[in-house]
Image (cartoon, rainbow, N blue to C red; front, side, top):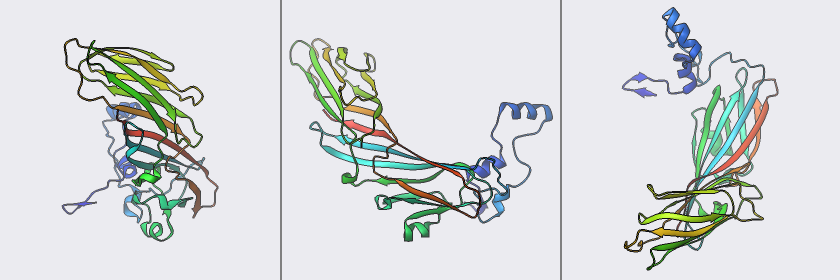
Amino acid sequence: MLDNGFPLATESNILKELIRPPTILRSMVNTITGSSNVGETLPTGQLSTIPWRRAGVKYTNNEAYFDVVEEIDAILDKSGTTVFAEIQGVIDACVKLSGMPDLTLSFMNPRLLDDVSFHPCVRYKRWESERVISFVPPDGNFQLMSYHISAQNLVAIPVYVKQNISFFETGSSGRLDITVGPKQTMGKTVEGLVVTVHMPKVVLSANLNATQGTYNYDPVTKILVWDIGKLNPQKLPNLKGSLSLQSGAPKPEENPSLNIDLKIQQLAISGLKVNRLDMYGEKYKPFKGVKYVTKAGKFQVRT
């Protein structure tokens, strides 16, 4: 990158060679010898045509692992209909390969990806013509690409929520009843399920009963957190009970919305699947692996 005529390195692998990350051992050596973490020589890769990779990389175990991480941002209305849904995805890579490997990553269904952003190592022309990702990888951890899927028909909603939160005109009380169940999970288990409700200011306390997990209501911040954990499709978790309101205060104008947090291992909710990873330019056979995970981003249910 050029800034005011000065060339700047922004690749993290190069920066780590220029300024070595601090460790306790390095700090002790620097204190004794009076040296610093700043490298004396220019990184070898900086002068090559692929500045993101240093020359002469050697590993005893050659491996390339990819993590496909997707976050769902969604808004569901009271009846469970999707008002808005989109997927933000990233593919994180951990590549520890000797020499100068040239990798090609292909997908089963690359047409899903419409809005993509790549690491500078990716040959964009190959992606445009063949829909494959061809690249000489940086050494170590890096983000290969990010993508965005905004077509509502492609976004599967993994859970449904049946809820009823009502406040009574008299008696300064209210009722709460929430049930969560699996929807489009492709047979995978929903984990780390947490429901958060930002209650109106007039709610003083909550007397509830959870069939699964634990709940906590903070009377200061007015936040109700129901930590469910793993979702069991045979016995759906339910939280219900009464709410105590401030006496004499008017009934809340509107019902609070529910925020959902969840995680599904070994599933990319968009249906994206890696087909294969090929390596050229080197003779050895590397260990290869792909892991998928789906998380909730801003996932809101209106009541």
